[in-house]
Amino acid sequence: MGRILKIENDIVTVGNDDGSLSEVRIDDCNFNPNVGDEVNIYVSETKTVCVKAEAKKEEVKSDMADMLKNGGININLSQNQGSNNIGTPEGVYYNVGGKHAVNKLPYVLFAILLGNIGVHKFYAGKTGQGILYLLFCWTAIPWLIGIIEGIIAACQKEDSNGRILV
Image (cartoon, rainbow, N blue to C red; front, side, top):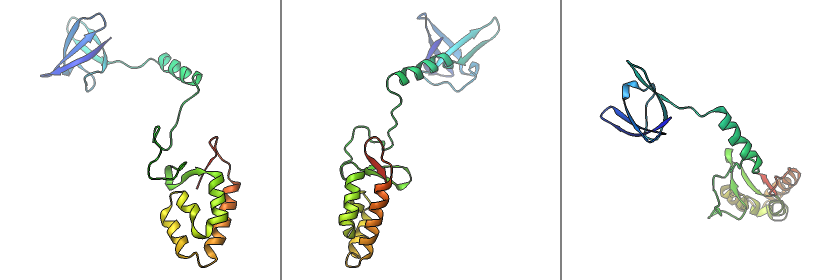
């Protein structure tokens, strides 16, 4: 097995495991070669073939086993590795589909106690809806909707971090 080191003038230079170099024509490769690809080179009396190496299934299985032994696979829905989400309230992470993950207890309290002025909407990062609640706060409609949203949020099952999707 070897690794492609250089591609120049339709010549592919491959560094072999034993430290030697092999040169093959780009036409002798059965794939579109790129620098860094792992390849196997097969030579006969009349023909040279360069084949892209595939990962062995056993290696993939052992990698998966190692990940599971070390606590599983970390899936970060917010795509903010280690960030504090600057510009958004503490604990708010954006999720797929326009829904937001927020801490359950503060959201429920904001919705029930301050739902008439839309504090729970601002907390969830839904500024437009929060402004709409503020505009109609003199009516009882935002207050009633806030209580209903607070009850619905209180009934939702939270994740291991105490967050719910709203």
